[in-house]
Length: 286
Ligand code: GUN
Image (cartoon, rainbow, N blue to C red):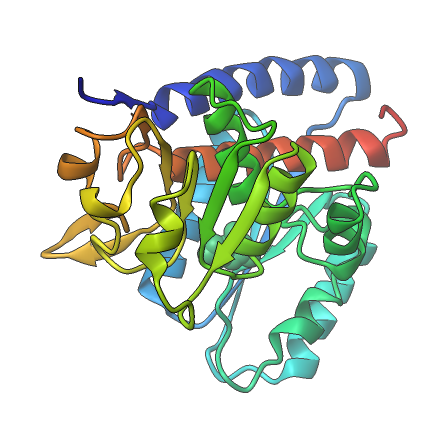
């Protein structure tokens, strides 16, 4: 039997409807609404699209957004000054610096310049450290938070499950691994230096793939009845494709996310959710 296709678009819609109602209630109660500031450096086409999508998503749920566009060649000091100004601005509740950054900018220095209480990306070491310590981070990174919501939606059992994460990025792989571990899964993290990738993935009850290599995971690499979350997004012939061979794997898995329409919409919904909680915390409502 073909796998259940986990509908990220529908779930994101549900989350957004809830956010919309809460934003309206907060507007009535406080006279203001949450505001997300997004800093975009340079002209990376994918980043430009993501930033636009974030702005539109804010508007749709009644939140404000502010875009700061800086030149590709901007000096690190100038970028840090911009972030500092946003950090001080009481009208701004959440700050996101779109990644990747041009080479002259040290990503970790920029990430650490965002105050933890406005770090809606959840990438500051204060939040990442607390995530790993199971000690109430102020924010969980949006994509990993979306992955966990999709697993819950699919009814995946995590307690005692073998969970395999392919990819070890700070944005996805590492935080997903921490969240799965918190849910009592036995977690394996695979990466580009992993010897026999298929041997690991075949043992996975829950498989999360976040690499950015089209069709890296075929049906022969998936256990029958596994739950598969595909975080990959690559452009192929102008089409968005994931890291998993969807058509083949859906015949073997119990549940699988499509690309597009799986993790992507959830990432933005979770970013908005983080922005809402930043607002509430800053207003003393959390
Ligand atoms: N670039 C791709 N995904 C992300 C994300 O989740 N946050 C930021 N800041 N940049 C990204």
